[in-house]
Picture (tube, rainbow, N blue to C red):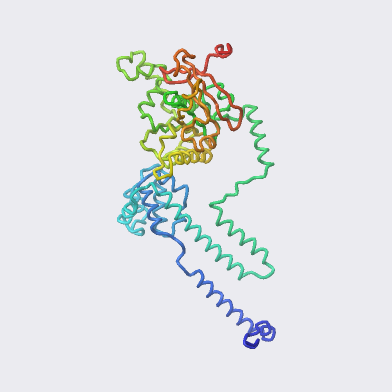
Length: 483
């Protein structure tokens, strides 16, 4: 094949006049436009069934709305009608209103959008498209991934247009613009949260200065002087594990933390009780706050007029107490996270107590129970960091302490521990010698701080008042006596 078989464009451009070159340039631009249209003139990536499943799950469960809204935005939906429905759902959810197909239809009707989305029949078909709301986050991830792919295509198209329209001298500017487009696509997944060490150290020293001058509030107070002195209160972002054998008092200690935070320091706290009912929890809190024995609250004959007066005074103090209790059965991790996020938005939540870790369910099949508990542990640590509050997770210990002569628990005794030891910032082990021997330090308890990521470990001696269901600081002179 000879060179004559190929047109010499460079020689033609030099030899031809300007008008002919201009026509050839326009012809090349048109051919490039056609090839570009052929490349991008396809149906963009999307999944209508996943979008329908997400909306169906949101219409079925308010908790699913809280989870999904953290994962996707209205722009992640490809179908305009799905965007409209999603906005209506979020409008109701943000106003703390119930959400279902009928209420969403009313919102759409008021806005004149009901017919545009297919009417009430389409809304009901969304609910019918999914058997349960438990997988809403899975479908939301599919929707989000398709949206990312559409953004990649859009960014690629824009970068190609920049390359074709720029002059040679603008090449570096085009590269910078192209990089900005690519980074913008990934902004939703990779946030630029990194900082130089200088400003970070400055902030840490400034915080220390404020703490020394009393201008900075400590963490959430536990209500126990020695524990607060060592920990400076329960710190935001920390996962605190309170562990013990059954009937040792770990639930009592967890509730003590919540009582101190909400009733005595006015920090919003929530207790998720997977073991006790709301009534049982309320009785324990009443007994601890009023010093009326717990057994008396379960027998009407033991409530004297004087005790009724005490109870009424206590009730009056609870009018604005920011303590929340949830005893929903079979509570899943998704529900807990959604409820915590909601309370963070509405009541500035400061403390979460979960009683207890091994009773939580994931609602999905896992290889082993140990793996499932490990996933709970990791998720609760991430929740603490995300909401910037301490999460207190109560946990069972295995039979290890009962195999030892002194019966003292150890960190390795955490039942189905998995990553609990690794994820926890603080681990308290509850030990009462008189549980095994009534003559061995009756009424005393050792709260063993087996792990403290940001400070020293220690053992705290508290009084255990079982009759009124609470722990209490030892008298000062009692501690000074070296007992």
